Length: 114
Length: 114
Image (cartoon, rainbow over all chains, first blue to last red; front, side):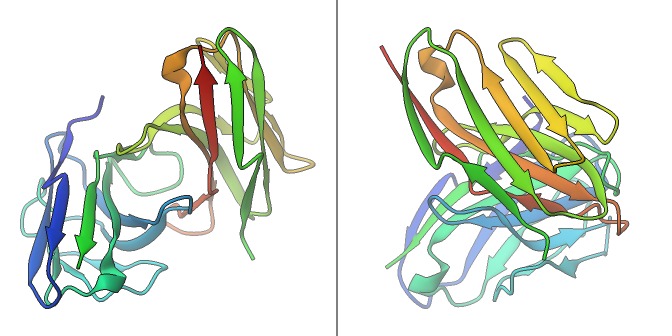
C-alpha cells in the first residue's frame, strides 16, 4: 500500500460553500495528480503538478484549483461548490514523469454537494 | 482518438471459479498497459504493468496478457476469492508526452459469490 493520504474521505456540503480536499504523500514523489471519477465511469485527469510551484490543468475542465507549495502536499479547492461537483476525487503521485513510472493512488474523497 | 474499452461491464462468478476480463485500446503511440484493482470506495491499486515486448505477466492468481498487434489485453483470475470482488480497470499509457498520459477504461465490476 502506497503512502498517500486524502482527507476527508467523505464530505457532504451545501451549495456555495468553499471546500478544500487534502492530499499528502510521504514518498517524496515529484509528480502529483488529481482525478475525478463518477460511478461506473473512467477516471479523468483534472490537475497535475511536476513539482513545487508547478500546476497544470488536465484533460477534463474543472472549476477547481490546486496549489503545490510543498512537495508532499497537493490540495484541491472549490471556491463555490455546486451539485455538479458531486463526484469522487482521487489523488495520485509518481516518482517521476513519463509513462514508465507507477502512479500510486490515495483512497479518494467522496464529495456530495446538496 | 485514444480510447480504452473494457468488457464485460459487469460479471458475477462463484467462488473458486476462473474468469477472464477483456480490454481493447486505440492509444498510440503505445507505452505500456496496466491493470488496476479498485475496491469500492478506495483508490486503484496496480496489479500488473506490461510494455510492448511483454506478452504475459503474472501476479499471484492474476495473469495479464498483451497482444500489441491487435491492441488487446486480458486479465485472467484463477480460483476466485470473495476478496476479488472489485472493479478491474485497464489503463494504457502513451509515450507521446513527458507527462506519460494515462487513458482509463470504465472498468469491469466483478462480483464473487460464495
